[in-house]
Amino acid sequence: MLSYLVRRIVLLVFVLFGVSIITFALMHVIPGDRARLVAIYRWGYDDFSSRELNKVRQEIGVDIPFYRQYAWWLGRAVRGDLGYSLVTKRSVTAEILARVPATLELATAGFLLTVLIALPLGIACARRPSSWFDNLVMTGSLVGVAMPNFWLGLLLILIFSLTLNLLPVAGGGGPAHLILPAVTLGAGMAAVSTRIVRASLLEVLEQEYIAMARIKGLGEGTVLRRHALRNALIPVVTVLGLQLNHLIGGTVIVENVFGRPGVGQLIVEAIESRDIPVLQGGVLFLAFCFALVNLLIDLSYTFLDPRIRYGGSDG
Image (cartoon, rainbow, N blue to C red; front, top):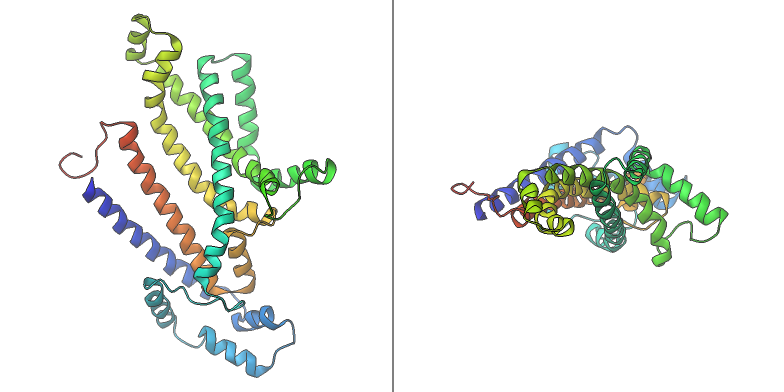
């Protein structure tokens, strides 16, 4: 188990290294004068001199070869220094950490909403397959899967904010500001997860040991709790983990639709202003979250099924 954990951590480092190279390279093939765009964001159109523009050029190192720029940035990043924003002049690490609570709040709310919807609905459908309730939920889940996040977000704003005036349109001021973004983020994932829970539980309920438990006289609720759910949860955890990764990426879209001040909105602002240090730091942070979530999902398998072991001898 320990050797497996070490291998995964080494792999995580390689993933972050690859992400940093790709992000750095992409920012250098984007057409346009990066120094001028940074100057425009910093001082406004035509409100800066050629001297200030040259200063920005030196600051972002446009004349330095790519590999030297990358090596310099990587050396600082390894020491925990992601540099300074070219627009706000603040530390990139501070910029990201200031936005993390809003993103974490949204991701947690969206994930909890997904679990609270998917588990009861999936279990209820599996207990009564092909019933009117099952057909209704499966039809609704198809609609949820096909509905893009941004479209659902705009629809919710139109209904609950602009028409009924029940919830705020945008911002991150309190719990009321969290409802519509969380529903937007969690609805699609709940639709997919409900179908997975149903399918996984139906498969387990057809196994011989479930039939044996019923023959012994155990009630259907007991069979479900003691024998079926735990085995059915392994593929569900895998899908929820993949959904969690999707959720992390989805925050970028949802935060911008609802104007929430999270890491996703910070990344989009950095793209618009060509603020390379902030963009690199933000993408690296999201990549780290992806890799960490995948690692935690793999480790959770041993808890759900003690037969699963990682490592050389007990593999």
